[in-house]
Amino acid sequence: MTITIGVHSSNPSLYYLYHLSRLGFAQQELDPLGESVVFHPYTNGVRTGELLTQGVIDFGGTGSTPPVTAQATGHDIVYTAVSAPRPGHGALLVAEDSPMRTVADLKGSTVHLAIGSWQTHLIAKALDDAGLSYADDITAVRSDAGSEHLLRTGEIAAWIAQGAELAAARRTGGVRTLVRTGDVISDRSVFFTRRDLAESRPEAIEALTRALKRADEWAAAHPRQAAGIAAADLGGSADDWETALASLPWAIEPVTDAFIAEQQEAADIFHRTGFIDRPITVAHARARAAVGKAV
Image (cartoon, rainbow, N blue to C red; front, top):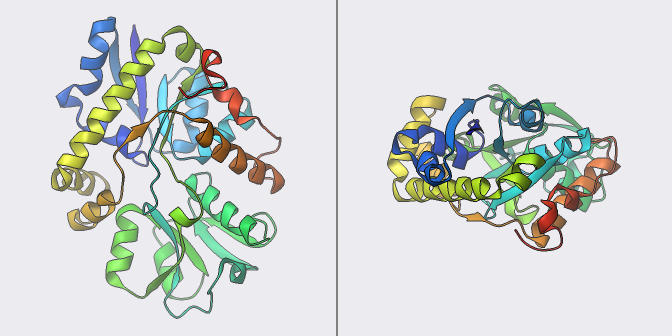
C-alpha cells in the first residue's frame, strides 16, 4: 500500500523529510512492511485535518493549534508523535520604543499573527494568563509580508514572528521581545493521522516516526545545508535560516499525558474565546489501544 505524507514549510521535520527524499528515509523505513510512500506538498497547515479526512493525505504535521481545530470540526484524528519543546522558535515582538511592556498592555490593540497556527495558541494563552481574552481584548489580524513594516511604523502594536523572519528582524534591530514563546507554551511540532490508519497499521506509523527522526538527525548534523535548502526554496538569507534552525530541538518524542494536558488547556482557552465553537476532549485523539498511557 502507498502512504501519502502531507508536507508544508511550517513543519520543519516534514519539510526536510520531503526535501531529503533523495536519501530515502521514509521509503527505507517502510520497505520492510511492503509499503511505499509519496509526498503531497501544500501551503496551509491549517488544512491538515481536512486533507486527512478527505483521503488526500494519510499523515501530516503542524504546530499545536491545527489538530485542536481539526478535532473541533469533527475530524477523527490520532496523534502519533510530537517534537521536543521549541522555546526559541518564535516570539511576540513590539517596536523597541513601544510603550507596550506587558501582555496586559496589548488590550485594545492590533496584533498580527498566523491565525490558526501555533501562534494563535501563544497569544491566546498569554492573554488568558494576563486575565484578557483573545476574542475581546485584541484585534487579531492575519500576518503577511507587510507585518514587520507595520510594526516598525507603529501601525500595529505587536507581531508574532518565527523562523528566518524572526532572525532577520532581530538582526536588523529596532524590535523588542514582549513574549518569549517558551515562557508561555511548549510550542511543539505535532504529527497526526486518521484513526483508521493509526489503529489498523500502527507499524507503518512507527516507521514514519523513525523516518522523521532520521530527517531531524540530518538537519541537526548539517545546519548550513539545511539553511541553504530553506533559503533557496522559501526566501530569506541562509544566515538567518541557520540562526532559526539552530533554535529547534530536532528531537521527536512520544505522545504523553503531559502533552495531552497541554493541548487540552489550549482547547479550553479556544472554546472560551470562541476560536472553536464546541468543547473537545483532546484525549479522544489517541489510538484506542493507547488511551491512558504514552504512545
